[in-house]
Structures are given as structure tokens and as C-alpha cells.
Length: 128
Image (cartoon, rainbow, N blue to C red; front, side, top):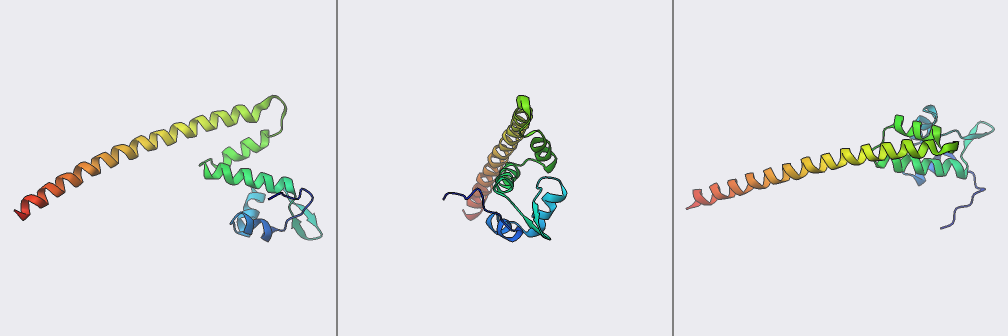
């Protein structure tokens, strides 16, 4: 589905599209992540705001903190690729965290399987 780059979005439209509350959008505004324009007293979001929100949501889903996202977006579009270097560092850190978590989960699963086998063995012995 093509997105109209000239369309303006209301708070409720974007909130609904991204399954967020209107308060979440206002929170992102307070943190400086979004800067909607005004049409009278109404906030309106542009295609660029929508794309930015999409990026914010993606980074949040990957487990990045709001502080990390603010840093990234602050550098976004700057000359010299600073955001890419920062982004690469953050990505590598997050990957390391996730690999560590996976190792811990794999170890826990193995230990639980051992306990399960032990419990089944004792249960079988008790039935005999």
C-alpha cells in the first residue's frame, strides 16, 4: 500500500495505526522524539513524522532504550554518518545482550529437561 507523502495525520490516526495510545505519542513529543506541526490547536503529523514513529517503534521492539533512540535520532541526517556509527555500536551491544540471554535460556532449558527426566524417573519408580 502506497503512503501519501502529503497526507497529514491526527494524533488518533497515528495512535491507531501503530497500536499506541494518544498518551504514548504525547510522551514521545515530551521526550523530543516527535515534533508535530500545529493546525490551529490541533497537532498534525506529516509523512516524515510517521516514518520517524515507525523507526522509533522498530528500535523499541529491538529493545533499545528511549535514551538510545534519542541519541540516534539526534544524529540522524547529520553529516559524517555519526548516527550509523552510534547505531552500529548500539546494535552490536544489543546483539551481545540477546546472545547472552539466549545462552542463559538454553542453559535453563537444559537444566529443566534434566529435572523433568529425574522427576519422570522417580515417578516411574514410585509406580512400580
